Image (cartoon, rainbow, N blue to C red):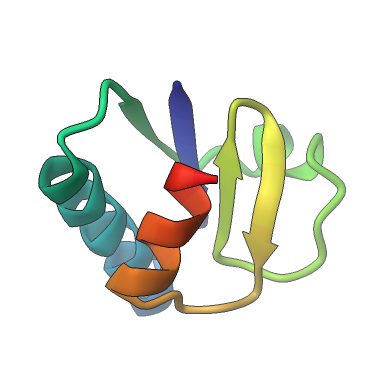
Length: 77
């Protein structure tokens, strides 16, 4: 599983990255976490609001600072 946090480095983006890292650790899942800050690559996902979370290339959340519980739910779907 590949999980990407899409964001330019704002506080919400950093919080989403840290929460996602914690969720992966707590779920003990085999996932690769990538922090994508390159705006050109982010634009390829056709999202208007950051931060965003993409799992296996599909955007599952955009424009929200997700809680740990919400991230865990998205990962386990």
